[in-house]
Amino acid sequence: DVKVTQSSRYLVKRTGEKVFLECVQDMDHENMFWYRQDPGLGLRLIYFSYDVKMKEKGDIPEGYSVSREKKERFSLILESASTNQTSMYLCATQHPNYGYTFGSGTRLTVV
Amino acid sequence: GQNIDQPTEMTATEGAIVQINCTYQTSGFNGLFWYQQHAGEAPTFLSYNVLDGLEEKGRFSSFLSRSKGYSYLLLKELQMKDSASYLCAAPDSNYQLIWGAGTKLIIKP
Image (cartoon, rainbow over all chains, first blue to last red; front, side, top):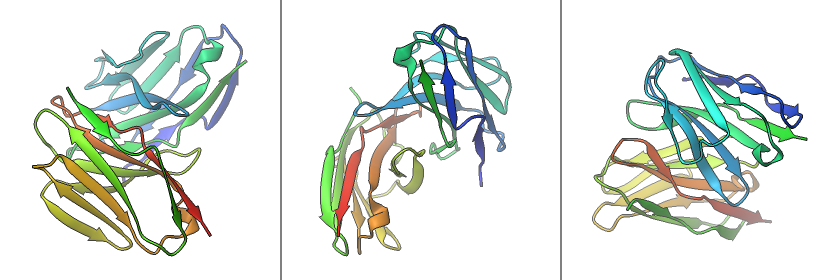
């Protein structure tokens, strides 16, 4: 089974802090994604990556950046956390049949 | 454009059957996915349909009609643990999944 590991399940950060959310997969998948999910809004794509050092903006990239230095690791960075970035963050990898496997999610609270 | 539509919320009774519908519009077709998401957790894979017809997997079945752009997820013998959101998704022209907003299923005793 594909395993997608997100480094933290719960995180509390202060406004203005730089926040790193880490995601590691163990199946050599090329495509990786970062979503945020808020009540009533569904999954919203922040950034995705098709290969090492490649990144593409999703639907809501403002206030975020990403890093993919190694194939198995895709990091989401909040350059200066704000309260409106309080959310559930989900990392996913894509299988050859196009389906996704998600990490367990990180619930980030910015105070 | 590309779009996935599903009802926002449904309520059903324990032991009963419920059908959750999904209509989709995508450029090309590369399958239709259903995921289950319990509150506070990540979505998990339920089913993948590429061909028309019904695919059964235990208490859960998924149906696809490509000509109608329509799918449904059928849950039988409902249990309280089936209370969750059910997400419909289909690949777009770049093979990324386009997600429906999810259907919250409430099971009552």
